[in-house]
Length: 418
Ligand code: SAH
Ligand code: SF4
Picture (spheres, rainbow, N blue to C red):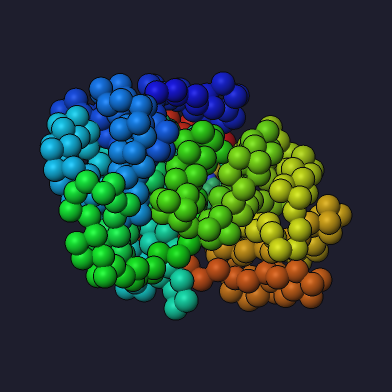
């Protein structure tokens, strides 16, 4: 199994080196987890386990379909695979889901799951139901190295990148929980077994999960290879078959990876801009010291031949007396126009957490800020906070299991010096 991680690129901010870069988290029972693997990877594992080339190819195609299109987690359920073959597979492989430590539901219907990997790392995912859509907010890392000052996740010590299996696993688990797998029989069929016995019962119901945002814990472009491989499976028409237009990747501005994100993933882009001057952005989004606002906006202008149909979303957290003045709004408009960006601005009221060094701007201030941008012809909706009561809103994700981190200790030390 190849394991090309992006650890070769310099990572800004306080960080702990990822201890064991890997594509599959080893299991105690020694079986291999197929979750997050492509057809080609599954085929290679089947060949290694002794199937001939032709059989491995057919079985990989069938298994891939059952895993991602049907949501099967047992080989026994794969009715178009020969009965004798199913136990052979089950002895060697599993189709796992992330372990659920806790599932919470907010009074507004938002759900949050605390998940645990096989090596004991905790991460979170959030599902946000709306009238016309359901959005799953997926994590890409355990913690985050970037220490944006308004973000709770940024106070966690980075433990490690999530594997493709752990990333796709979040989508699979959400589908399980929402009861969204097609019912009935729709086997690929190899003509040798009991396929098609009740083909008429197939119905693709549900589809409450319509959108995915890579906006959970972590900076997705610092775990580029795994995020790409996971999203390829999510978009694969033989897999989860979600359109790339329904997927949004949010980055704090990892400029050197944005071109590859466009070329190799091609999903919608959201950029956490949050400030319009070097001074303020350096303070609240420290990666700005490495890749400045101009460089970032140029990378946005170059993204996927950005056109009006593929607008880039600029996220802007509203922090009282920090980045929320009329002059800031006007400068934001000027910048977006200067780079001719097909843009939409998402104004995010700051979600508080214990010990956060900022406050949310007043509602009137946010409306005024939004109006200035709207009047310049750029859409600037104010995002309604969701799931605040269960700490599921933007920037509130942080697993309780994590003890005081180095980032927090650094901040405390800085505060003590001041
Ligand atoms: N790491 C990526 C994606 C995850 S964060 C990124 O930073 O873009 C998703 C969004 O929530 C980002 O725009 C982030 O800046 C914002 N956010 C973080 N903390 C927040 C908070 N306390 N209140 C509101 N938004 C916050
Ligand atoms: Fe990391 Fe995004 Fe939070 Fe910044 S806002 S610390 S990049 S998760």
